[in-house]
Length: 465
Image 1 (cartoon, rainbow, N blue to C red):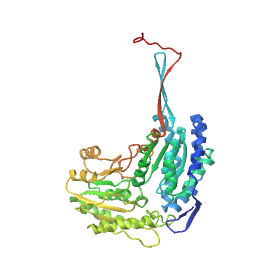
Image 2: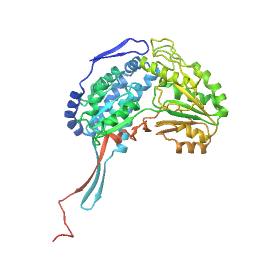
Image 3: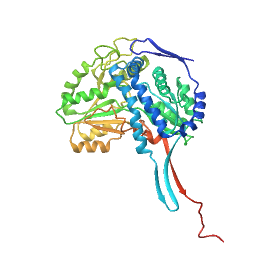
Image 4: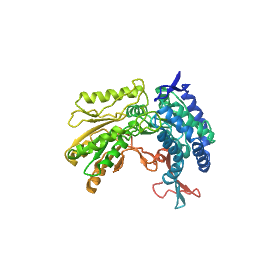
């Protein structure tokens, strides 16, 4: 079966290839695992550091490929490539801090704590950060001694293939990290094969739930789910409205809104809403939307494909049918391409708003009378990935942090742009309490406790005839 990848900004074919054989890849990975796990940590570390250098050497070409396949502006894809290279040093530090070895003296010997790798890890990647996010699973997994079978999103196979080639070029054995392109059938094989010891997923909540169901009767399989968000950004008492508007734009429209941490809902104190909108709407109107290599560079590129654009249009239209007031319209200058303008809708007072992740540049505004209502509105979602408070008092910030149901809670910062040097994950429909980024080390190996005696010594002091 042939898989074709096209450039979102132009519709031109970029890559073509056959679906991979996931079962065969798992078999090769299974065979390669013992030798890779037996290598000294220093050797695995050196190979991953060589991988980081290969990424840096190919930084321009890699960034251009990501831009072509995702439609993201070149300025943004350059930051993604830099994050891929930086992941190695961060993972080495995390591995040392979170999975270190401890040996203590005990009567007649020692007590020890060490960590072991799981084995074969299936890594399922998304299209919005097709190199950085799967790499965030793969580097710590490989460092810990696991082997990886990586399925990139079927919408970004070229980037996934290129990423794995850089590992091989650095000297990581080909069977230790493999790329298997394909659609849902490949993903199902990776999550159902009993030779797989872990599933590391980044993507939609619907797919994450399906993976959880597939693994429900296999508790021994480690499963890390990084999923979506219906994230709130609360703006409260502040006279820095221009700065607040900038944070809103960064939160809602970076990567054309295709970030799991993007702000979907702007919750604002009613008495300051009009003043804030007077700053926000002109700034939204200034956002340049275009192709990744345009000069001057756009702030937003297209969404990933026409199917995604169509889905966003349907979600936007539904909100209008429910009574949303259009403050800035979602427009599509060319119906043949998935370029969308940033949208702002006021949904205040609408009953029964769908609790879903509109994965694109659509921001919903909710006006509330007091901070109690702001907290209630922020938490009115089954998701729990990211939340941010802009403005407000120290007391209100402390309450917001304490009561927000989210794995990332920011103050006077965008909802997105999380650091790889911190844990990353959420609750509810956003994740299964296995945060990645710096804490990925936790699910890439498991602790083994040992009681170790120098000699064979044993006695039974009571209860024998």
